[in-house]
Image (cartoon, rainbow, N blue to C red; front, top):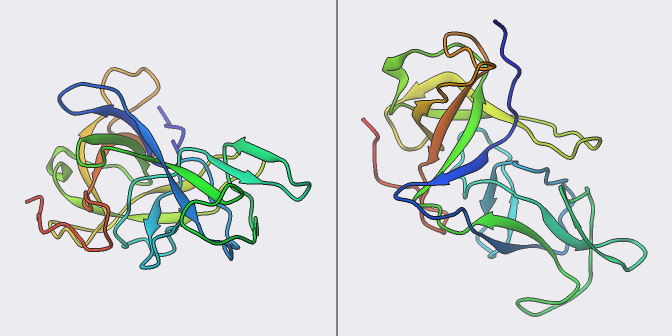
Length: 199
């Protein structure tokens, strides 16, 4: 059975119980790149959040919607932040700024994603890079997914395979585009990587 790729990184549960909760992170005034629903995002040294541009970069989880001011001056909540959604403002949290919603408890939150190639049980606890394909302006959904190319035990790769999604009739765990459960290796809100190897 062929799997349908599940694009992006979708928060699904919190280890130990509880609900997935979100907080907002500011997007800078000069952002010119769309941030789609479930895109991997990173924090920059200036305190802003941007879409990941390198498949091996440490990630702060994924974007889970956004809020912004459109060209007509209307405040909107949406699945994704359109490209070149610019605003003029100053201060830490201006009313007209663009924001993305981020997972609040990154340490304990698990995400589901797809891997472009078939995996095996020996891949559990291995670390993986991302392929950063473009999202869809029609659905608002991310085009990001896990790639097995260069998988390793080093935590310089952004995601660690925790398990396969088992029990779904639409997920063939022995085929490409398998739905998997992953955890981010950068589990604190800073640009530095986690020291864990995942071996």
